[in-house]
Length: 255
Image 1 (cartoon, rainbow, N blue to C red):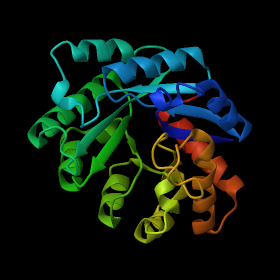
Image 2: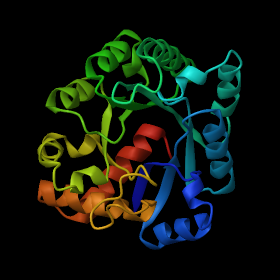
Image 3: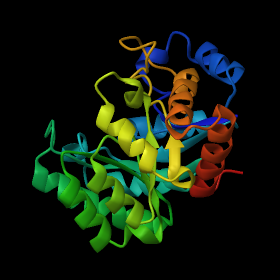
């Protein structure tokens, strides 16, 4: 089987066919899903989905786009959600200097706070970073994030970020972006990342892989990511399935 290590199953774009979408994925051999919290509302929704379906796990946290909205009582509720059944990680958290939906100083401050909270909760971290490589690595090092470990999700950085992330003991997760025609450099990086540090994801409903690019993404399509990784490493899809599933279970302590 495969595990979609990062998806947004609560997204409104799945409201009309969520159960059918999940069944399509399971029919395609996707045995487990990690649905991601990005603020309080989506963290609550992720936990609810994990408690409804034994094949779904959840994360909780506040995305860098949303950290400007954090209020004094938010972390109290996040702590409560984090100890709920089915929660396996803290995130997605990090820095995004591409869109700057939250001021950069606020992003850095809240990122540190949330890394500390993840350490307190003893949860691995799901990291979002875009055009913020140096500050992301600096904060993770200074806050001793390597003690919990985690994953750089939807990895699209350069060779140096890949090396820094691996040196910290983190995994790299690849999405449908590696199937895009213009992702030549990223495919070269995929070849250099050890398979035992590699995860696969869709980030659905975003970033649908070829041949579905431009359409709504869904977890069933994670197989296209696995197929591309197999092609790049010159191995079978079955080998990619086995190693990425084992990696995801190990990182998130999924039984």
